[in-house]
Length: 163
Length: 163
Image 1 (cartoon, rainbow over the protein chains, first blue to last red):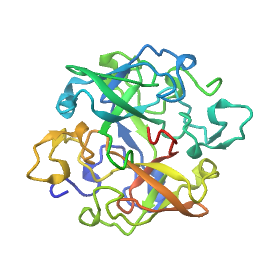
Image 2 (cartoon, rainbow over the protein chains, first blue to last red):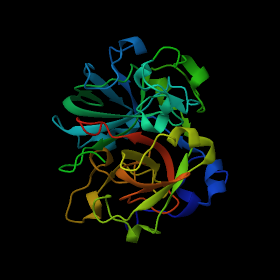
Image 3 (cartoon, rainbow over the protein chains, first blue to last red):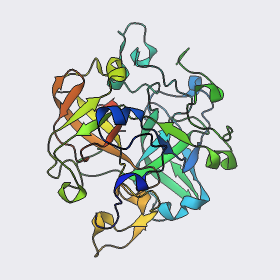
C-alpha cells in the first residue's frame, strides 16, 4: 500500500473528537460519509419494497455524481457488484427488533439481523450490471427505495464470493 | 416495516444540507457514521496486513462499545458475519489506482477495485465467530489494522451468500 496511505488524523475527513484507538476515544469519534450518487427506482415506499434484492426487486439505476466519473470508468456490462447504500429512512436508535417484522419471531439484537434499523444503516446489495449510459448504471435487482444515497460500489470477489 | 420507519429528515442524524432526492440535493448531503466498536488485532501497519482476510489474516477481536451491547446479544460462536469497518487510514481523494499496487497492472477506477483508498472507505470482511467474552467477539480472519473502527455487523445470508 506504499504511498497510498497517510497516517493519523490528517487523512480523516470526519469530525474527529479524539484520535486514539482506545475504547474511550473510539466512542467519541464520528466520520462523515458522502453520497457518490443515488438510486433511481420504481420503488417509492417500504410497502412496495421486498426484504432482499432476490425477493422480487426490480432493476434500478445507479445515478453517479459527475465528480466521481473517474471511479466508475472501468465498470462494464455483466460486472457483478456489491453496492453500499445509506438507508436514509431507517431508525438508528433501534438495537433489537423482530426479524422481518414477524410477530411470531422473538426479538433479537440487530447485529443478528439484516434490518435497516441499526446504528449505521448501511445497505449491502449484490447486483449485476445490465447497461451503462454515461453516469447511469442499470443493475438487475435492487431493493433500495428511489432516492436512496449510494456510498460505494465494489466488485464481487471470486471464487471466495462476497467478503 | 410498519412503525419502524420514520419519514423525512427527522430520522437522519447526519448533517443534512438538502433533503430532496434530486441529483443536486444528493450531492450536498453528508451523513455521520458512529463507530460501534473497534478492532483489536496484532496487525499494526499496512506492511503487515494481507490484502484480503483469506490471504493470511490473523484472528482478531471485535471490541464493542458498551452502549451497543443490546445489538450483539444474540451473536453466537460459529455465526458467519459480515463486518463493516471504517478504513481510517485510507486516502479518500483517490478515484483511480493500480489494483494491489501492482505496477504491471493498468490504472482502473476505484469502484472496479477493492482498494481501501476510495471516497467512502468502508471495508467488508467475512468472518466466523470463534469466541465471545462479554463485549469482545473473537473472529477467525480479519485483515483490518488494530484500532480500526467498526461500523456494523450483519449475518451472512444463506443460501444465496453475501449480498
